[in-house]
Length: 160
Image 1 (cartoon, rainbow, N blue to C red):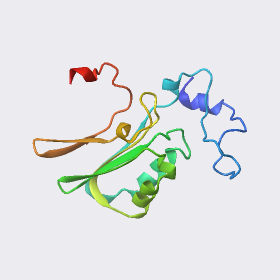
Image 2 (image 1 turned 135 degrees about the vertical axis):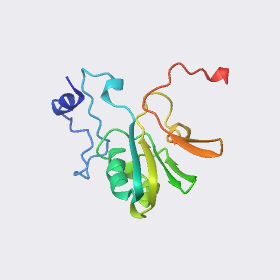
Image 3 (image 1 turned 60 degrees about the vertical axis):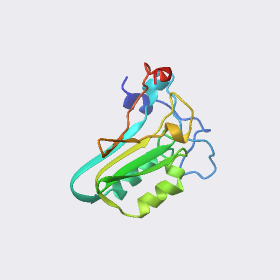
């Protein structure tokens, strides 16, 4: 079955979080028994590349809700946008749906040509600030930001 079909056919137990019911305490985490955790969910990415300066708050608001509110991606989040030739970066190991920093970005419009955001579903590594994307590096005097979806399984840190 497709992921969509699996979620539609999976009943939620009463212990699952319902955002409309203030009495529930646990986060919503559907767990179809016939899907492995890697098939169930991976990190999600949002990217915008615009011809004119554009405010990303509307798009980020919906994306941030998926970070622990309406979806299982509650293991941190990050966002980078370009300000001229510079790069501004925001990261938080807390769920985006509950983050005061994410709320700040949703309520303070910033215009940019490019933005990359990431909400994490930890399948590898701990829930730590250092594991939240987008990552950033400067090379040849240019600020780069990047994010990936999945595990870099053949990376051996001892080589570097």
